[in-house]
Image 1 (spheres, rainbow, N blue to C red):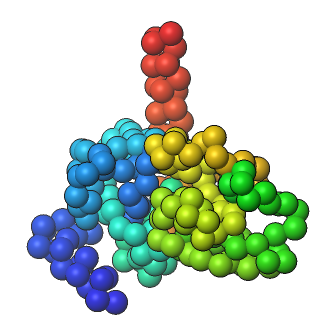
Image 2 (tube, one colour; image 1 turned 120 degrees about the horizontal axis):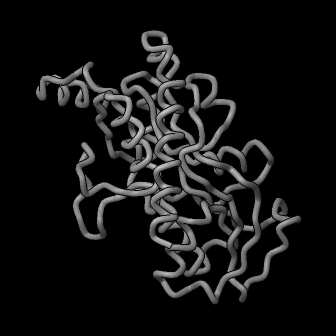
Length: 243
């Protein structure tokens, strides 16, 4: 509750509380992140870039709707949306709990859930419930899915980077992670040749608008989806021009 009060006071002090749509996200490359080494500011500035945030901003610009993006830890981003202190959060995959308090838009980015393990410590992905030390980062849909399906979670660090480091140090036998995020980290750490992987499922990512917010603006999802489609078309046309 203290975090929520501080956020409210922050917007009041700016004189913009209630004017823009306020969305929460987290610092996660390549979907939305600050450059390496740059401090993580609460209110995203022009340096905060990535697949998901760029598309969200594009759609809002076309809508003519003012947007403020807050950058907070992922679990907090969802709590702020659940309590309706913000108007929504991104980029998240579908689960029944999120659907209970928010409505998702069209897909804003692709994602695959994958298992990763060290080649030096082979794992049978069909038999992970009988002793494997499994890791998933806290607040993730992957963590909830593991719980719902009877997988014991040995460790829940705050970030995918911490998951990969725990795997490298052999403090975990196997981790579940977003493919783009994990493989970017594995390449940066020069670990790609040391790991094997297996796809768990396709889980595309969405922007979730809170249902309480949509009571006041019921047209918001349809407007966003329409402009998001135009943004995708611009991306495709731009890619063709570069070929």
